[in-house]
Length: 357
Image 1 (cartoon, helix red, strand yellow):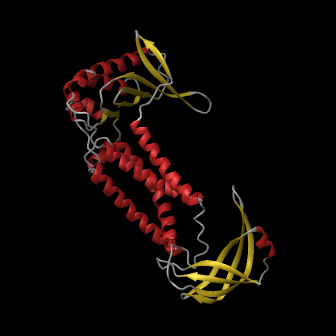
Image 2 (cartoon, one colour; image 1 turned 45 degrees about the horizontal axis):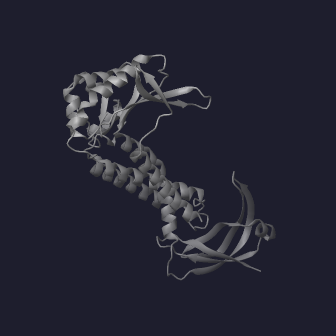
Image 3 (cartoon, helix red, strand yellow; image 1 turned 180 degrees about the vertical axis):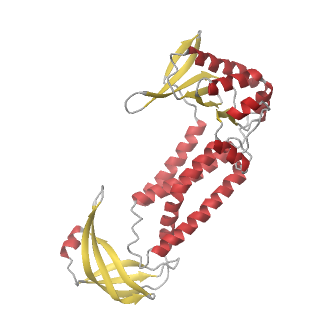
């Protein structure tokens, strides 16, 4: 059951990442300004206060791009070779605006067309635009405050769309550089996150069946560190020459830092407990204690088992979760027969428990 849930999470999150890149964004409402239509989407907090606003105007350019205020981490990513940012040659513009677009024609257009640069710079520096972007068929601008009392913002957005529209007639190609590479990286990163989430919900963090628990943790952390470096190497190879990699790289850095240790831990235990042809060692253990514990979802009943014998040279002391009925029947000194498997990775664990009446 949980395997199906994890697969569904991976497919669902990967599908969402594809959907959000391939499908256009529709505004909540349509308004008019100076006899021209524009779309408006309000983003509210829990108290229904306006937190940000998105203005959307038609721009059939066929180019996807993102323009944002330049941050310190943009310079770091560019300096270490993890991202490439196009420079227009206009120092005032280049220091204020991060250009996220790998389309050569748009890059040349911004370098040559001062009206376009002026409108972009004005939106970011004067009107607090947090993001200017295009899906290929529309121009969208995010503002972090309510702009509706200031029609000048709409004028500048429309002026930017007008200044870019002539580029559509000059386009010789409709390709989207790095699009599939970015999509591949997003799906990879979020699939690992989905696997970690599914395993977490599955309760796979319970490694109480292992005779030694910390070696599993150490091994998983080594795998996570190696996986983190390998992921960054892959991102660099796929997106190192892309100026659009900014968002993907920052997102990947945060998500993988949280998800990889969890995914590595879960994956290590699942692989260690996968099918093996090794003959298990059988030992007898007695109940030395029992206790209840509760979580938000359920109540757990645990028996503490100890054996005077060893399995694969290791002492046998485990915490065995049981049903409420078995917990009520169990008494101190009751005997259990344990089958201990060596594990494919060498981490011995109890594969089965049999109560000896």
